[in-house]
Amino acid sequence: MREVFADALLIAAKDLRIEARSRVLVNQVAPFALLVLVLFGFALDADQRTLRTFAPGLFWVAVLLASLLAVQRSTSLEHADGAHTGLRLSGMAPSSVFLGKAAAVFVQLAVLEVLLVVGIVVLYGSTIEDPLLLVVSGLVAGVAVAATGTLYGALASGLGVRETLLPILLLPVLAPVLIGATRAFDDALGAAAVDGWAWLGLLVVFGLVATVLGALAHGALIED
Image 1 (spheres, rainbow, N blue to C red):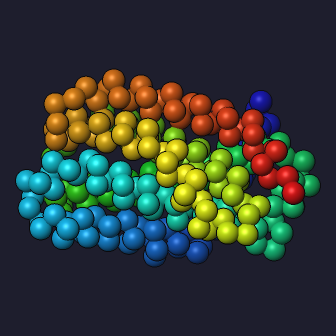
Image 2: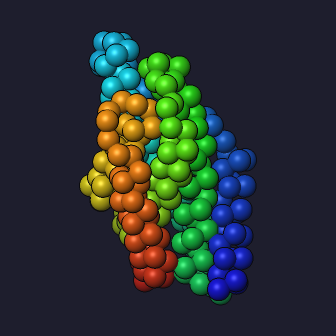
């Protein structure tokens, strides 16, 4: 078990080093997500009361759309110059590869969520009433999105149209995460009178199922 996590850490470090050098997150993913928030503001006629009410849902829609870019990028790394073949021949367990790649996507999503929280506070005038719930639900939802995205990225990786097929496969599956995370943020931001901690339980279950299923199925999904 220790070897599995050690190999996963190597995979995650490798992906994060590539992202740090390419600056895709900084130059493409983060600006795209912030642009989505700005466009939502224009669509709702820049009414701050309305924006504060819908800020949790708009936040997570922006996260999910940006996560598609991060997952597609993560998948494409292994198909450049046949790197996925090298990973299979390296002797690493498929579960290690899955956990490592999911961890790298999660780190990127965590950074993105911090930027977007600042965005909704500045652009929408949102106030954080329960910082602990905000942080915990953001991290748990990030795990769920990263694990599910990595799983479906592997599923679509062998298809010639994976860039266009991935959103169709992934977004419907992430609907429970969108609902649960939005409800939790409703409570954390004071946008609605709901029990955010109860909705956090849904996110925890979804994240655990996606992580375990991905670790078990990843080997079969990446086979030629």
